[in-house]
Length: 338
Image 1 (spheres, rainbow, N blue to C red):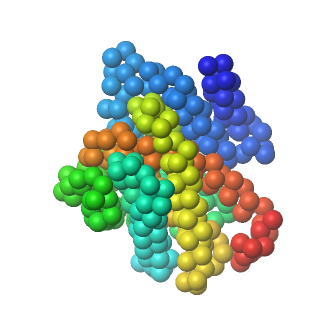
Image 2: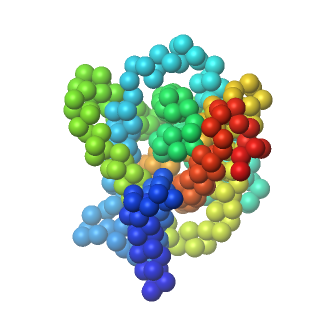
C-alpha cells in the first residue's frame, strides 16, 4: 500500500508540475490519467459506490460532458472545410473505421483474449477518434483544424458505423444489438455534441466563458471514467492485465503506424499525416466505456478502454514531443525526426 500511495502522489505531483515546468508541458493529462488509474486500482471502493452512490451511473453523463465540451469548440468553418477540401477528411474517416476495428479484432485473436475482453478491444477500435487527439495534434505541430474536423466527422458517423462494425467483428464474442447501440450513441454522443455546437453558434459569449473551465472539466471527466472502470474491473484486470496491455499497446501502435503510412501513400504531406496518425491511434475511450456498461452490460468489455486510454495517453504524449522536435518544415519525413 505505501508503494501505491507513492505512485498516486508522484503522478499527482507531476500533473501539477506540468503546468509550471516547461519540459513537462503537454503531459499533464497523461499524468492525471495515470494518477486516477493508480488510485482506483489501489483503493477501488472509492470509485465503486462511495456513500452508496453507484459511480457507474455517472459514466454516461461524464461522456456527455466531454462531448458538450467538444461541441463548443466547433464552428461552421470546421464543417465547410469538409466541403472545400474533403479528400483528407474522407481519407481520415476511411482509415479510422478500417484500421482500428480490424486491428482490434486481429490482436484480440492473436493474444487469445477471453470473449468479453476481446469484444472490448474491438469496441475501442470501433469508436471514433478521441477528443484528446486535438490537443495532442497541437503539441505535435500537426494540422489542428484537420484534427478537429476529423474528430467531428468520425463522431457523427459513429451511430451508424460503430454498431455495424461491432456486429460484424464482435458478434461472435458477445450479443450485439445494433438498434439499442445506435440509440445509445445518439443520446450519449450526438445530442450533447449538437447542443455544444448550438451554444457556440447562437450563444458565442456563453461559449467563450465556458471555454475557460470546460477543457479542464473534460480532462477530469476522462480521468474519472478511467478510474471508475479500473475500480469496477480490478479483479479481472489483475487476471488479464499484462496480456490486455500488450494487445492494447499493439493496437495503439498499429493505429499510429498504419495511419501515418497510409496517409503518406495516399499523398498527404507529413504534417497532415502526423494528424492522421494521432486521429487513428487515439480512440474515444469514454464512449467505449459507456457502451460497454450501458449496451453490452459488461464490465469486462470496458477493460480494453481502461487499458487503452492510459497507455495511449502516454504514447501520444511521447510521440507529440518527438514530432515537435522535428525541423519546422511541414514536409519533414518521419524518418528524419530526431
